[in-house]
Image (cartoon, rainbow, N blue to C red; front, side, top):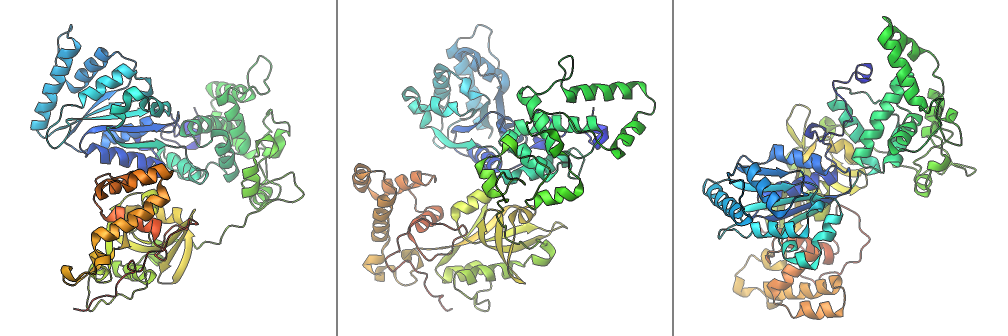
Length: 599
């Protein structure tokens, strides 16, 4: 009804799982990355959980549209099935023929034969089950048995389970411990954060064809309080708020629109007009009737825009009139004085302390001063690759000698460092926790770079040609597609350049690792019994234990990511991207970078 009024091509807040409308927050990027990584792995189970409405199904649709060409997907949407019914559904999805009276054994035989033939053709088979919390223990055990078919290199069936948080509790049952041990990747999808909501709204409006900001800042804050950041609730409330604004003939969403919409979406009773109809629906019906019978309907709407807007009734004890503001007191509200959004019962202690609302019952408003940030300009602040690495080396205390080492990573090797190039999200970069060179896409599609020194909240500290600047990371992220490079410090046994037999005994790999593991066990073991148990393990098992603690791949190999996490836990003095207050243990001497070698 309101699409033409606002200029939408299509509804911006539909709850259908359309991948085009998937806003990739940090959590959604991580969930999608787990799916894309897992499907290229060696089979087994991938488990993605999340509360109702957080976007699990939408992510699965996006995943299906972006899987590699050699992947075939069987999608099960209704898992309330018996073991036989589920096996028959898998056959239907994969195009496997079977007789109507086929037994479970016959269905499994047909599936196994299909998996072997698909593997011989270079195809990878994936079974994706939505709403997996509805699977019975018997069916889950049957799924585990399906993954028993394997070659020497990999299992022939990958199973992805998408479900609500109770799925984790189901998998933790003792009778399902064998299945739980076959989960190769798992991720829990949380709701959106408060500072992500404006970008979420802007993104969905843009996909629907509108680039202007229809929601005022105070309306967005109210929307977050009413939805708790759950995407489905955000969509339902936003859609109804747009309908309310349309019924008034205004093209900007204010807090009172959001509050009224939230009451109707949540079924909270408000004041009703005679006949039990809410004021919003009554107004919508009246406008629709007028438009249906009047030739000059659009003139009527536009005249309503220019006329003063009558206050909409609502159930707030403080009255709805405070929700309507002129441009003057809207500005005052943003500065912490009397504003457009009524505090009333919607306020929380957290919102008062963080300045998330404009008014307070206290004598004066509580205002937290935000740092003054420089507007990020990619053309002005972007660097060449060499300039960006120059800044990175300076953070580690080195001046890059380009005459002897034309390539940055060659110089890093000489300095006892290594380059690590990754494709990931903000969270994966924070896990590594080293200053980074980010690769950005310029306005004309060309690559440029920035040196990211520090990241705290939305404040990003950059090294630029103008010096060190603080900018909004959201502005940088508009040009960043996940590519970053960091430097990390190698242990002394890797930095040694002489004859291996001459390496001092205390610096040899085994002794160095054993000493570090003793420190790490002391940091991460839950109790003295676990310390004793891990201390008696052989070194490879200790490494796997530590990798499990840190959420790394448990291969027992002391690779770059394992060494970086060791350094994060134990080494003071290495540059950090994210400020930390945790206590660290200084290394015993040989952990410092060596001086660059000549020649």
